[in-house]
Image (tube, rainbow, N blue to C red; front, side, top):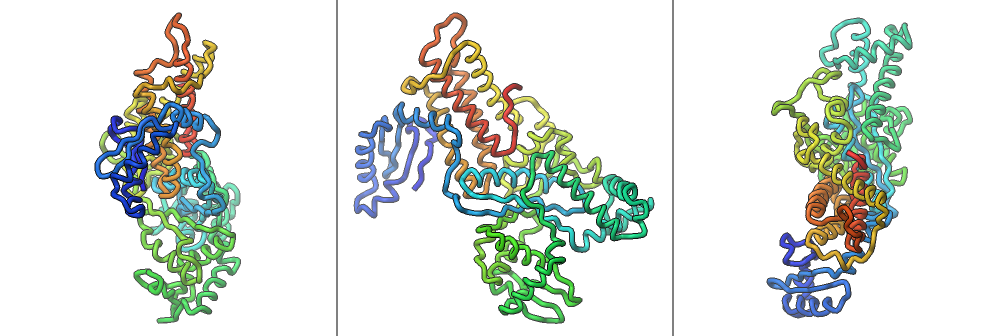
Length: 511
């Protein structure tokens, strides 16, 4: 069954196919069942009109009191929240960028989207733990350390290493803290990796994204939890030995091929840490483990679910979201050079160019399933062409009206039956969609739906303000209509603020 707003306002405030869905169970034709429903609904005080259309669609027009109920609900704290996820503990792991350099644009996209998704899930009742997995084990750390040592010696970066001014800066700071570090690679590793991690956390914090847990991959190996997970899989027959290596029977659980867990030289493959990490997460009591990974990690969907099944766990306790690539464009041309990283555009480059609010909003407002081109020139504009400015400006306009009303001593009213103008109805219906939008965003893991809703709300509000005078002019007497429109503006402002808060974007009162 669906309930939606018709595109043509002449068809009412809401349309539903309930009769088409239920008529067969009742044993009558859909149109006949819809007619019964329409007659019954006409007796409800909240329904001004109920019409039957086509083979059995039901079009409903709300009465003034029902519209007033929407406005009153929007004025309450917690509007847009729900309880359908209450009691569900979710581990939301995102960003988890390579710890050998600044956060790149793909990581920035996850920082914004993941943070917003966490807020959306919490809004619908879930207990969410935001987690960052710090990959401080493996070959990439060895290459990073060699790069730091080369930079400290004034030598070029190793062929498989890392370059950029950030490497030089960290190398210099390692030597400042420990002048003799060049003779001890472990000291370079400890200080250098620690500095890189602190810089990553700092830049994420400045981007408005903080985590509840920073989990270190190295701890899984040092604590023996990787060995324990491997032993469990060997014991239950999910691993087999071939060519000196140990393989996970992942094809038995839907993967396209079996995966090496322990290599022939005895070293654990990367998936060994993933398996131990999943065991750790589930052991901490999480009902659902959501992984937000980059475009090159599509194969992880099947392998992580296979790992869960091999462990005797529920594959549905694992959910993997894949995000596509991000490109910056300026003056119609791709931007490719970073100020600090040399080759890869970083999150800080984007923030320096357009600010945190515009950067976050631009990352969130599109589905992560598709690639994203961010137009820097557009995001710098203070005009309605810029989506974040469009929404923030609408919020600022509502705040301005409320300030002016307070200066004039005008208080909001609640005679909602006076709200009969088409633009008033449009605005009320749009406000009424907010809880459904947030619920759908949580269910589908698509926080961009909130951003798109806010843009729709901004457009609806601008049209309302253009056609419906809220405050009296000059010596004009304040009427109950002015007062109830003021209440509608207040409700709109609160919905703007709530939506922007979910996205981690500020709601300025003046612009």
